[in-house]
Structure formats: structure tokens, C-alpha cells
Amino acid sequence: MARRVKAKHGFTAWAVLVYAFLYLPILVMVIFAFNKPSAPALASFHGSNVCAIPPAQIGNITVWNGFTSCWFSAGLHDPTYLPAIVVSLQIAALASIISTVLGLGAALALARMRPRLRAPFDVLVYLTLVVPEIVIAVALLIFFVQARNYLHFFPDLGKGTILLGQVVFNASVAMLIIRARFVGMGDSLEEAAYDLGSGPLATFRQVTLPRLMPAIVAAFLLSFTFSFDDYIVPAFTNGTTNTWPIVLFSAVRFGLTPAVNALATIMLTVTVLAVTITAVVLRRSRVQATPAQEQAPGLDAALGLR
Amino acid sequence: MAVVEETAQEAVAASATRRKRSFRPRYPAWLTAPSFLYYAIFFLGPMAILVAFSLATQRGFGSLSYGFDISQYRLIANSLYVTIFVRTLVMASIGSLLTIAVGYPLAYWMARYLTTYKLLALLLLIVPFWTSFLIRTYALKIILDPKGYLARDLGINILFTKYAVGVGLVYNYLPLFILPVFASLERMDWSLIEAATDLGARPFTAFRQITLRLTLPGVVTGALLVFIPMTGEYIIPDILSGGNYEFVGNVIGDQFNQAQNQPFGSALAIALMAVLSVFVIVYILFARKEERFGG
Image (cartoon, rainbow over all chains, first blue to last red; front, side):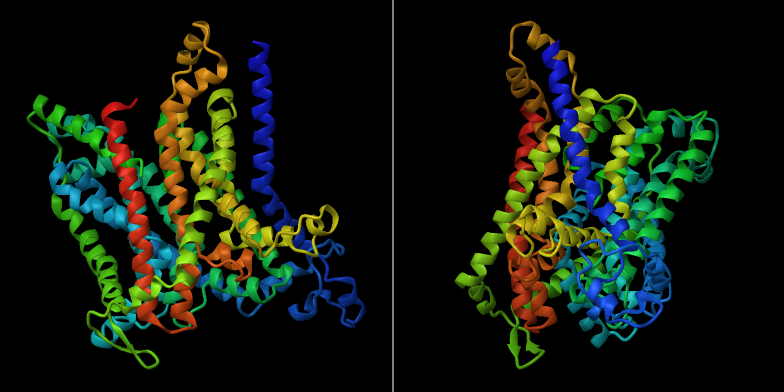
């Protein structure tokens, strides 16, 4: 028994280390959102707002130079950051709606289709997930350029092509999440509805759809996150459009200010608050639903990550 | 990838119910039409053009003529590119092994010892995903920076080396590995371990012969789930190696961004997919075997 307890302590210590590793960069991101420019930069700067120092002269900001909160307003007033975030939000909202609808349709039909019929479709879905994103991105780039050359109804490289490209991967993820839930649900309740004289549409609307809702929401949120955070497909299909990850990437490469940390901290705070509120609301309304049912789609969602 | 086995199981279950009942509520097959059409245009279409480009001949800057020119593929056999392919595969393998070494004990801890806080521990694995991947990688760069605390005070100066890339790979893919492994550990029947130790097996023997054996499919699935995107990784090598330690993905990207040698970039992309398909096929064979004989 003593040995088991000792083993448990060993594992717990390891777990603490791993969580520290996972959260250290996030902690650094938040702390360095409040970091002042380096002392030499401050000495040679004569304005009142230290956050107005241009990135090139900011000096070493990988060590702590002192506290300031001015990066938050600097980030919110930056001419490129907020518009890029808005573009990313627009694309993510549309991409996740389209992906969820496509995924829902395919999941419903495929889950109960004969294996031989659905095999080709399954292979296609797995291909979209297995092919590295960089390969899909360059393929989409040459495809959109060629398509635009020959067919004029195709959009120029920009928001539209980013959206069209992202839906490929996201629809597959949405399909897998919704299908896992649909298969796990069984068909006895639907059969009961049919037996009691309900038509196919009414059954779908009143029986199937409500029970699928957690998976549909999970699929939507996951594709939203993927799309919003995606750099590679937009980087190749954007034309001149800037999304938030594109702005971030060039900032990381060519020098950035803590204003980026400040914006990322705001977004993390908003997300954590939103999730906490949702969790509290769900817990209150979860009297009828079994906890296992509530957890299942979340875990599936997590399994579908990237 | 776990779905490969699931669908097969589900097929068995489906044929069982079909015998039992005459009626099954089914949804019309045309519901797959929109997504099928979508994949055909925006996935198979680009892939087909990629193949066509890889076989085309470059004529001057940015213009090319289609044909069946395999010279791009010959160019890949050039030692420089072979080195980059080997480096990518080696780094992805090391990254996956490290991820297993770091992640398996954590998944084990969650499944074996946690009860009340299990859900919280899972949630805490997902929260890092709510912060941009780029920001987290940038934060790692701050931590590893030569002028930062780690390098200055502890003498660990690894930014812009392969070690930094390794840290970045493990950091970003760890949760992705832990989740499927945790799922397979959750299904473990721990009384088997008790039975084995009662019958005189040493704890480590019991672990090796029962727990590891039963969770191996989950581990392999999780490892493949991180290995594949690692081989296509683009951002981590770029930011953390500063261009010193490029992966195949970076070289492919360069052909489209700077070099403007699209046929060669396309050939590299196809070659990367060919290499990866070997791993996927091995995995599918493994999954089939597990399904037939394994736990």
C-alpha cells in the first residue's frame, strides 16, 4: 500500500511540472503585457506615453523593466491590430457556420449508411485531416489563382478564398464530432417517434436535433477556434487581406511590442469569462441531463483538435 | 484516427441490429451531396492542380507549361533536400517520443488517481488552446531568448537551435496526445491490475503486461495524431529556429513566397504526402491487427 501512495505522489509531482510547463508561456504572455520598454529606451525617450516608443527602439523586453498598463490602450488604438481581429472574427463566424451545416448533413446520412457506400466518403474525410496543412495551403493558392484565371465568378485572393479554404478541414472535424454523438445516441427514440406517428421532419426537429445540440455547439465552437487561430491557409490564400494571425506572425518575426500581449490577454480573459459563465448557466439547467451526456461532446471536441 | 476502428465496430453493431429489426430511421443519402461537392471542388480540385503543377515545366519567372516533367522530383533526390526530409522526420519522431514520455504519465495520473478533479484537469489541458498558437510560441521565444532570464541566469541558451524547436513541438502538441491516451486509460479496468499484483506480479510487470498492452492502441493513435502535423509543421521551426533549422513545410512555403518556383514546391508537397502515407498505411495495418487480435 505504501508503495502505491509513493507512486501516486510521484505522478502528482510530474503532473504539477507538466501543467507548469503548459501554463508558463501563458503566464509570461500576461505578465509581459505590463512590461515597460528597456531602461536605455526610456532614457532617450522624451514623451509622456512610454508605449509610443517605436518597436525598433524598444530594446530588450524579454526581461522585466517595470510596470505600465499603457500597452492595453496602445494595442486597442493600433491601426492594424483591431481591423485584423475583426476580419478574423468575420471569417471564423462564417466558416464555422458553413462547416457545421455541411458536417451535420454528412454526419446524419453517413452514420447509418451501408459501410460499402460510405467508405469512399470516409476516405475523403480522413484525407482532408491527414494531409498537412501547408500542402493544402499551397494547393489552394495555385487552385484559386488558376480558377480565377479561367472562371471569372471565382473570388480574387482575399477573405472569400480564406473562408473557402478553411471550410475543408473544419467541415471534416465538425462531421466527426457530430457523427460520434449521433452514433452514440442510438436510434430507439427516433423509432419511438416514428411509431407514434411523427413524420421524418417532425422527428428530426423534435427528437434528433435537440439531442444532437451539444455536439453541434461543440463542432461550431471548435471550427470557430480553428479558423480564428489558423495561420497557414490564410497566409497563402489571403492576397492583401490581413487576418489577426497574419499580423501576429509578421510582428513576431520583425519585432513586436507588448501591445500584442495586451490584446492577447484581453482575448484570453474574454474567453475564460465566457466559458465560465456558460458552464455556470449549463450547470443550472443541467438538472435533467445526465453528466455523462454533457461531457461526451466536450471530450470528442478535444479529440478532434488540429 | 481512432475513428478507423470505431467505424468498423459500428459496422458490426449495425449489421446486428439490421437482422433484429426491419425498420431503421435513416437519413437520405443526398444530405452528403453538399459536402461531397465541396470536397470535390475545394479539396480534390486543388490536389489535382498540385499534381499537375509538380509535373509542369517552369518557363521563366512565374509562367509554366503543363506536361509530364519529372525533373522536379529528381531535384528532390538532391542531398540538400534529402537532408531536410530526414531532419523533419527525425525531429517529428523525437518530438512524438518526447510527447509520449511527458504525456503518458500525466494521462495515467488523471485516469488512475483523479476523481473529483478529473474534469478540471481535462479542462486545464484545453485552456491553452484559447490563446493563439502564435502568441504561445512567441511567449516560448521570450522565455528562451538569449537576453532573457533562462539564458542569462541559468545558462540555458537554446533559442534558434533544434532544441528550441523540440521544446516548441512538445509544448504545442502535448494536449493533443494526452486526450486520446486519457480516453483509452479511462476504459481500463483497474481490478485487472489488482488481480495481477495479488497473484504476485510486481507493479511494473503488471503495468507493462496489462496497462501498457491495453492502452497501446490509444498511444499509437495519439502519437500518429501528433506525428503527422509535426512533419508538416511550419510556424514552430520558423519562429523558434529563426530559419536555422527548417522543416520541409518551410521549404515548400519558400517556393511559393520567395523563390516563386511553384512546380518544385508542388513536387516537394507531393513527396511529403507520399512519405506520410507510408506511416498512415502502417497505422491502418496496425489498427486492423489490433481489432482482430488485440484487447
